[in-house]
Amino acid sequence: MQPLTGMRVLEFSLNIAGPQAGQILAMLGAEVVKVERPQGGDDCRAWGPPFARGSSMMFNTMNRGKKSIRLDLKDAEAVAWLKSQIGQYDVLIENMRPGAMEAIGLGAAAIRSAHPRLVYCSLSAFGARGPLRSKPGYEEVVQAFSGLFSVNGDESAPPARVGTSILDLGTGVWGALGCLAGLMERSRTGEGCLVEGSLLETALGWLTVPIATFAASGELPRRSRSGSAKVVVYRCFEASDGEIMIAGANDRLFAKLAKVLGHPEWAADERFRNAVGRSTHREMLNAKIDAIVRTATRAEWTARLEAAGVPCAPVNSLQDVLDHPQVDGLDIFDTVEDSSTRLVRLPLSFDGARPVAARPAPRLGDDDVDMRVPAGNTGQME
Image 1 (spheres, rainbow, N blue to C red):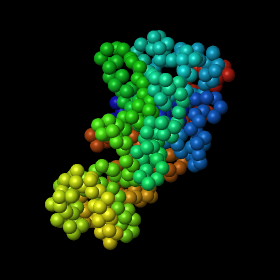
Image 2: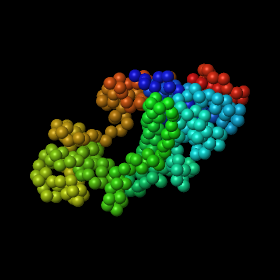
Image 3: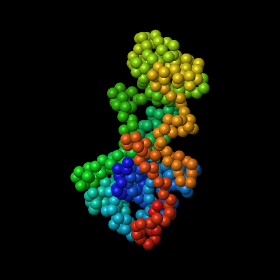
Image 4: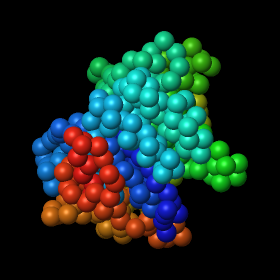
């Protein structure tokens, strides 16, 4: 199922957030044309090793299924030509440095005035309004600024980055969702719209619970290396051969966990029988559980806990999870052309069927041109 078949998307995007939004639309069937600099293209192409098909794996991850055209946006003739093409498109996605699109006449106000049916998606680091609207930024910069670092990592260690580019990827998902909503609205009214999103807004969205808790209590959140600083029992414990995550997160599950651990009386203990008590006595309770869990392997605990209906999981390496039959059963990977490298497809299915796998990422310079471009701006499309 490719519900966006027939839709055309013009993408002015670098790095991760904008390309992620474009790739989601491509995997749903849209034709996505990525505009890149003549020399080197998207910065992300060089962010390696490792590389495949001449570009970094990060680039391949974010840009499969697209076409690519080289165009010098500092060339007035090239920009004029590009403006003449925009009417052929349904969606425009950009995450350029704030103000860059406006400076060359491709900002949302100018383009939507000329093309009111266009859905224009603009993604930035700090948002379209406020005193930092013109401030550029990358994933780590916004994770630090937003407070996301402050709630991540071990309580005894400095604040830490979330290990994956959660803000870039999340902003790309929100951007794609906004584009889909804009296209639905256009089908009803005939009018396109402006979709705006930013890494900072995504971060604040992911911090909904810590922000609400802080607002209500006045207490800054405590970091927890695994699980939750508030919900108990809900963290990793060290078994004899490695860590296992155990989630006895409510009264019913805690009673089951206590029985598996050989202490069914804990479920009636005034200190532990409800969530408030377990949170108040968290250090004591977690220490008791730590001592018991160390006596057996992760596999042994997993078998016992799953038999009792207590959610749990070993702390896996990437190799562990990629080798697991559950992951194979999801059918979620593409293979990069000329490589055995696996890349995650759109993590979504329709009635049990996945969207058609995306094509490999475009090569900058592949010659499959179907648009005329000005002299000096050799268009290269895949």
